[in-house]
Image 1 (cartoon, rainbow, N blue to C red):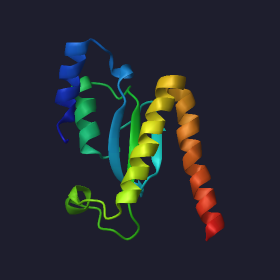
Image 2: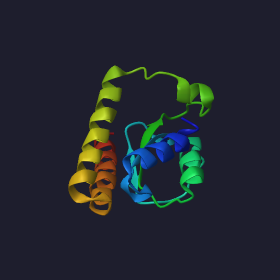
Image 3: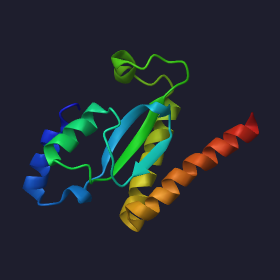
Image 4: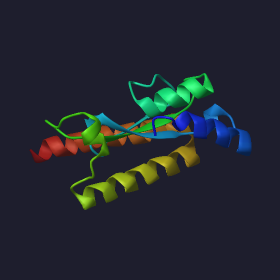
Length: 132
């Protein structure tokens, strides 16, 4: 995954599309598990896969969907990132939210989908705060 920029460039050549037409979907242990953050462009934020894509495309101008895999008080290292999820239901929910985010991107475009995806994150946080 750390060299994913090579595959992206090869796919762009084979299928003739622009950087702005991709959506890089990446894990992010710096945000809570299941949280989605959609951005139109930006830096790698330290993510090696995004660093590779940015390097090989020579631009930060492509959308990315960060999928939270973080947990409170967990070690944020290579072993954590490569470990498996302990809760199969949680991974099913994360995949369903990711699919929903991609459907919104395709239907409404990245800008409007950002409002939907990122708003849903804040709504989820508010609901969890009410339960506590």
